Amino acid sequence: MANYYLRLVVQTRANFEVIDLTERVQSCITSSGIAEGIAVVSSLHTTVAVVVNENEPRLLEDIREQFLRLLPPDGNYRHNDLHLRDCPPDEPENAHAHLIAMMLGNSVTLSVHLGRLDLGDWQALLMIELDGPRLRQVAVQVLG
Image 1 (tube, rainbow, N blue to C red):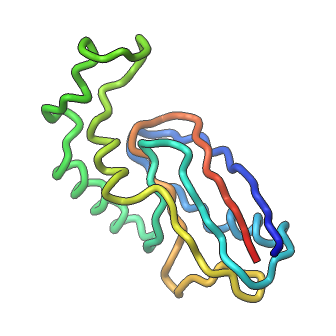
Image 2 (image 1 turned 45 degrees about the vertical axis):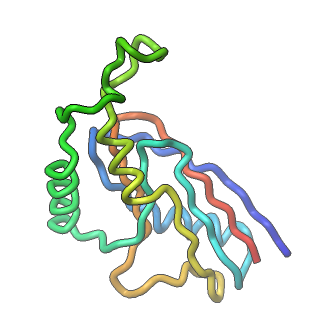
Image 3 (image 1 turned 180 degrees about the vertical axis):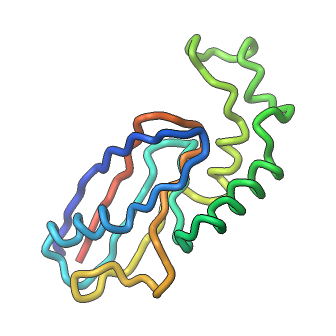
């Protein structure tokens, strides 16, 4: 079985941002030379999600608004009691980001067929920044 691994580095620009990784992951698959198998894409952060959905601007705004309504950044979270935790001095109050990331998930496994990500017509591979802006890493492993 062939194996290819790469870490993508992504600079996010906003506190809540959706970034389409489809083409970057497809480039990894192309570089791997693997024609049939799977691609596993994983966030290396607890406040970044990886999902498959439609990359349509109005839908992305709906997603943002609904999750921030459900888990508002200024909510009352124990994780944000920074004075009660052993944490770095620049630690942000980001409990909402951790909780949203848990709901969305931090990885996806996708089929690779004929050297291409096997996505539906409207599907895209999306990374969702929930606590930015920051420099982020996403692991891509292609097996086949």
